[in-house]
Each structure stands twice: as structure tokens, then as C-alpha cells.
Length: 140
Image (cartoon, rainbow, N blue to C red; front, side, top):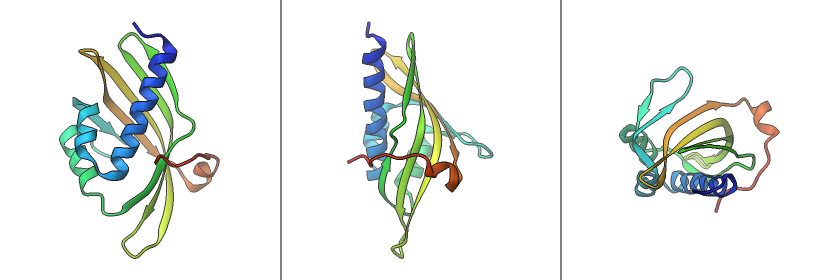
């Protein structure tokens, strides 16, 4: 059995892998860490299952230049880990303009057959003013 610090490090590492896979549009890497019964939720939008989520990532119409969060926090429970933070992303549109956005998020990981998998993701878009207070370095 892992202690809280080990689970926290493991889950934060998984989240960084998710960020990298989203930035690169790597649905195979995402598929490996997302549970089959995964659900993505956002206010005012219908739930998105794993297949639809992966399809959405594969068809993002902009280039994700960078994606990061420096304020991730993990709460670990037996078989469950809850990760919260603010994800920031810098995107480049086809005409070359760039913008940065931010989302507050909560990702829930469950341990299944000895492996930690993302089972639920919830995010809320933040206004520019709220997003300005979050600093950090993009994930390589």
C-alpha cells in the first residue's frame, strides 16, 4: 500500500502525462490512462464519454502551444485520488494569433487492478481576471 505522498506524486505525474498527451493530440497515450467508463463534465454541457472525449482531442481545431498547472493538489483515499487545480493553455489559431485560457478542474482517479485511471474530469472556464493570478511553467 502506498502512502499519501507516493499517491500524490503518482497522480500528479499522471496528470502531467495527460497534459502532454492533450497538447500532442496523442489519443493512444490518453487511452492508456483513462478508464473505459470515464466521463467528462462541464457546466452547461452534456456529459462526454471516453470515446467522444478522445475524438474531441483528436480533432482540436487549434494548435496547443503549451499546457500547464502549478497549483495541483491531491487528496488521496483508499482506491481514489482527487486532483484539483487550474489548467492553463496557450493556443495558436490557424491565422497565427495566440491566446491563453484557464480552467479550474477536478480530476478523479480510481485504482483498478493495480493501475490508477482517470474516471471523471470536471472543468469550469475561468475569466481572464481569475486566470491572471495563476502562474506556472508549461509542460514540455
